[in-house]
Structure formats: structure tokens, C-alpha cells
Amino acid sequence: MKPILVTCVYVGRSDWLIGGKDNDEELYETSLKNLSKLDMPMHLYCWPWMVDLLTEILERVKFKQYKVIGLDLFEWPRSYELLETKKKFVWYRNEYEKKHFMFCPRNEILCHWKLKWCQNAKDNEWGCDRVVWIDAGVTEWCKIPESMGGCEYVYHVSGEIENRYPDSHFYPENKNNIFTPKITEGLKRVLEDKDWFNIVSLTANDRIQEFDWVSNNHWMSRSLKKLYGWNNIGKQFPIDEERMKFYLKKDEIVGLDKDRWDNYPFWTLATIFGGKFETLDLIFDEYMQLYNMFTDNHDIIPVTEEPYYSIIAARHGYNLFYFDQWQHDKEDDPCFVGQTDKPFYTVFLDIINYEKH
Image 1 (cartoon, rainbow, N blue to C red):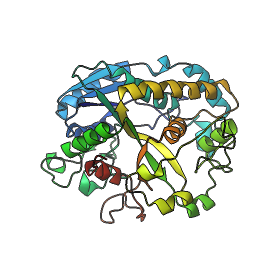
Image 2: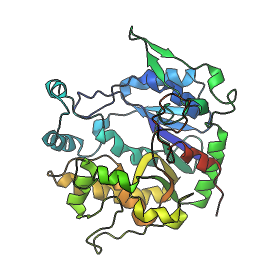
Image 3: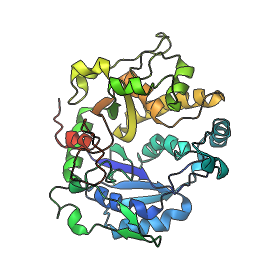
Image 4: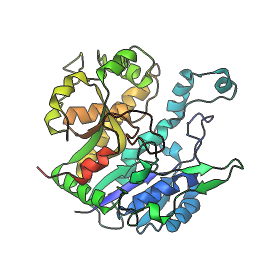
């Protein structure tokens, strides 16, 4: 059993209707260097004009087996229709954004491509029979403690980008860096044990009281509520049980305190997921049904991939790993914000320590 890694790097701007985070391709180099240490073959998607740039970066970080694939995001079905609907729901946080037409850092079309790109990897060059998606920028230091491999490029005042991290920051020189072949070995155990896996985020009830997912301004939640009539998007209990049934296999989520479940709403994330290609084919068919249902309704705000993943993962019991917060909990590391609930980076530790059932 051999998994292939799939990811993407698309430069985008927040003043483009399609969306973007205003990052240049160089900002992903340190994270890609971390991913190279997993020793997995990789397909990386990008704009056609970025192929040579990304190839240079992957050669520079000594990625062993990879293929860079140039693809126009607008080849996604109904992409222009989705963006026309998005125009109706543009909101601006301040007058500056309104003046400069800053739409949203989320690139919904890119997000919808993820499963299809994974599906395309079935006919890969290395005989891989499982697939794993990981976001290319996953090892940024706000999520991964710098002492454990988290890293970022920084901008000088001049606008030049500086790589702050020598080889000693990465595996194998840095023994504390968690991005090692141990993650791949853990993923193999997961993929031998499960047809598919997702990760899920839990949020404490007291925070929900402060920020109501359903009735406040959480656009994904409001869209799902409008489409499915959910009375509690966090717990994902549908009002119309005949139309949408869910089987929440909470007993199978690694490390989850079962007593917490009823008090902690959840959301399936698309940062890392994977499984068998055969299972992926079924998931993709279900995904496209949801996508077309959403896109048909022009009165619903276009959403990213994660609401669909939340529906599918809950329905089939694919949620396997969980975390409470994105930010790390290391007080002496950069980007510590004072939170100590189960952070995102522990998902990788759970993968490393996973034991087959």
C-alpha cells in the first residue's frame, strides 16, 4: 500500500472576485520543504503560468518524486455562475475594502477542485493506491510551533522575501520537527484501517454562546441552514430526518472525550483527508450532487468545500481525528495567542501514533 500526496499552490488576490490570500508562490517554499520530508510522491496543481516557478521551488527543496500540473481553475463546472452569485453577497468590513473591491480571501472554486484533483491522481506515475490531500501551506508557524517545524517566510521593508530557516530547522537535522516519514507511516496505518478519513474541529459551547453559528454572520452556517433547515449547524442534527440522515460515529474519533461530544459542535475541515480511490469516487458523486444543489439556488451564499465535507463525513462516519483550535499552544514560540485547548498540530501527532483497530 502506497499513498500519493496531492496539493496545490494558486496565487490569488483579495481584490479578485475569485478570491485569494495575497500570497506569492515563494511563501509556500518552507512548507513544501517540510512536506518533502514525508517522502511521499506528490501531484501539485497550479496556474499554467506557475509550472516553471513551482518546479524550481520543488527542485530547490529537493522534493524527490513530484509532478507539477498546470490547470485553469475556471475549468471547474459552473464556476462563472458561482462567481456571479458571489457578487450578490459581497460584504465589506470597512470603506477601504469597498473602495478597492476586496471580496474575500477564500477562493471557493479552488476549494471545490480538491476532491477532483485527488481523483485524478488514481492514474499516477508511481503505482500509488491511496491518496492524501494536504494543504500546501499547512506548516505555517501559527498552526505548527516553530520549535516543532513550523515556519514562514518574512517580508523585509524593501519588499524582498527572506527564508529564515536553514536546513537545521528541518528533518533530519531537527529532531523535534514533526514532519518526518513517521507521518507517512502513520498515514499508511490509517489508510489500511479505514476506507476514508477526515479531520473535525470542535468548538466549546461557551464560544458558541458568544458567536452563534446559525443566527449570526457565519455565512457557511447560514447557507447550510437555509438549504437543509438545520436547527443546529454545529451538532448537525437535521430537522427533516427523512431527507438527510446522519450517523455520528463519535466512538471512533481518535482521542475524543465522549462526554464532550454533546456539548461541542463540530465542523469537518479540508486541510488533510484521504483514503481509497474507490471510496473517493463515491464521495465525489455525492459531493457534486450537493454542489449542484447549492449552485442551483442563487439565493444562497456560495460556500467552500467544508460544508459539503461536513455533510458527507457525518453521514458516513469518516471523521477520525479532531482538534479544538488552529493556533498552537507553545508559549515560547512565535504566534502564541494564549489558547491551550487541543491545537491543530496534534492531529499530526495522532496520525503518527495511530494504531490499527
